[in-house]
Length: 405
Ligand code: F6P
Image (cartoon, rainbow, N blue to C red):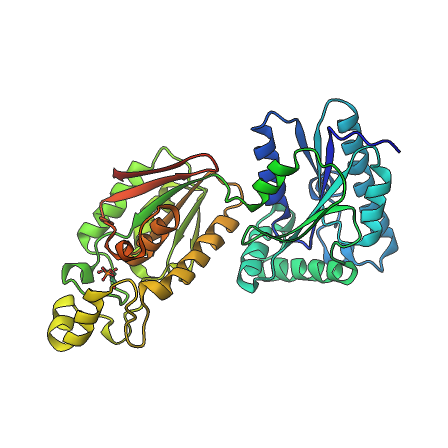
């Protein structure tokens, strides 16, 4: 059959909680900016609309249960048909957002949608911690509102288990990308047809999503007053006032995700702002904990200089590469902080604004991620406690502003 190459079906593929809907939204928003008419057809949304009855229970996904399998198949068929109609009218790209993990389902999609090419995009993410966090996010959906957290979590895990039974990776399909959705990395690709907007799509898949990142350092802590490093000190009264001022500064903004480390000084700094921003989700990531100063933890710089002059000297000579005995250095911190940043961006979906409340060394590494700096200059980036960085990072623009709050 003659295919029309000015239109495209994209079919998402992957187990639940692997970032498919985020990637689908990212493609939609990115293509819309190119004035392309694009729409998402989401099977989960349609299921919730048509079959609220028990469709959140794990057994609904048991492939052995023929009646439920038929109901799920019908939902898929309705969306396939809706996507077909959309391209038949004036739509240009129709995105089928569903698991589509079985070969059978995918060959059905390819045979039913034969008038334009189909591009499959499989999302893979086997990072245990991220998966746990993603499932936790799913349990907050209204369909789990009648279950407590533990039961909702287990129910969702069971759903994944059923899908795992029938899942097969992309291989024989005509066109596909297999994407590591945490690292925005294409792991495997095959394109055998002329794919409408392929260059834009490929670029969108590997790009970080548009983010307004507010990067804040925690308020003044008791250790800051004594120039002591590390530990887990609380905020001083001045630190609490800074936290209140931060909340006041952002009172008219809407920041859906606020990330901190697991240390008291960052969590306390976040308290007033999360009290004010009722819908904000506060997530503590250990990846954002301050550099571990090993045997120097809780010492002041002066004590290190006096009692451990060799450490003081070695660190002064090469601050970036120096690693504290039994601790970390900037050079080793990089991997951990980059991972935290990826995690935060992944968990924020397509939220446009996020805030990270971190520490001096951690914030320097985050800034270095966006800002070109020589490695040796990173440990000296200025990170005051009464100002924050507003980082706008899109494919076409990078902007940094140090603002007072
Ligand atoms: O002094 C506060 C602090 O966050 C310490 O906990 C940490 O060891 C230090 O800053 C990191 O900054 P620098 O690398 O300049 O010592």
